[in-house]
Image: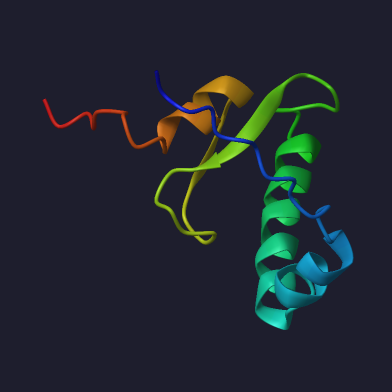
Amino acid sequence: MAKKRSKKKRAPRNYKREYNMYHAKPEQKKRRAKRNGARRKATAAGRVSRGDGKEVHHTRRSLKGPTKVVSRRANRKAGSPGQRSKKR
């Protein structure tokens, strides 16, 4: 019979440290500002609205490139490792 492994307790997640290590960096703040700006432009154009479940998708993996509006599910699914590319 196999032995049961006991689960180790993880330390609680330190959000303040995580913010200071990554989210508070100037280059990350600039990226976030560009993403927020793209969302704001789409809202002003009437393409998205608050609470509609849509996200602004950057089609070229660049914050400068063109954007399109897709569902949250499609946007999260698009970059997943198991997703096939459309080179047919």
